[in-house]
Length: 356
Ligand code: NAD
Ligand code: IPM
Ligand code: MN
Image: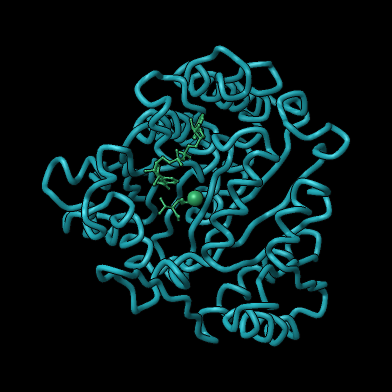
């Protein structure tokens, strides 16, 4: 397997380093053969060569089996023209790889319920999946731009764009608890009325999945009122972006959430949900769990290595259960210490598995 790592900006390099460390440990255990190639994206690429997604980066990504990204962006690039912002590089990469469905699982770990702003009886046991449409909608539709007195962004969705992400979400629900909530703003937006229609059409092929439609404002409220009521959520690009940060707070920290962006062909793209966290970058205190769990998703979705994915997930849960926490979770452990502890747990589990 060829894995491209795009560390990016801010805490990106700090968390991907730990994810690669854990990949090493689980790779040893399961005898995985792979190579890791690094490339530049975002602000780091702008500093090197003036553009956020260099041709070489795109070429190595296209030739890879999977891509792991840290984060892009930061205040030093906020005055760049739109096409030369770090974030544009990430959007171009998602589009070029055609990864239209972004899977963002959210779990509340029993050992963290004391760190969550919600009461334990509300938050405990949460296990949901947000499926976010990733390469359409407001982020990509034309026309866009500005003149002196106005600016325009366009929200456009085709039937095909909605149908393919709905299928992914319905399939995910079938493999989980068979419940799908499709989130939209159908009381106002025409795109949302089409969204509902197409989701219902696709749902006919999944009679074992119960589909409910929910307005996005209500969903935002339900996510903090009764987050356990959700199994799979499917929604358009912008709503999914916002709801997943909210879900990060439900889990205890943005730093915990991983993601997998998938499409009809490989490579898929894996990235933590959080950004470059400029407020804590360079201090060595970022939570690497989102990045490490993104490697678990890579093992599952790109390598078909379910056991290895579970081993990583168990080691993360075990490390948190030992009380190791980075400052975002009220602890004093560094990024490197946390990553090392997960890798050690993976390695010791591997010895246990061999002697058993
Ligand atoms: P952010 O996610 O970077 O940070 C939000 C808050 O969460 C901050 O207080 C930060 O310290 C905290 N946080 C985030 N990740 C953390 C981690 N791993 N461990 C501990 N705490 C963590 O969002 P922001 O501050 O609004 O955005 C900063 C920059 O990141 C912007 O330029 C934005 O465009 C970019 N961004 C990039 C991505 C990405 O690359 N996928 C995602 C979101 C934001
Ligand atoms: C995310 C980020 C990105 C998005 C930005 C950095 C373009 O917020 O991955 O959630 O909005 O998709
Ligand atoms: Mn976001």
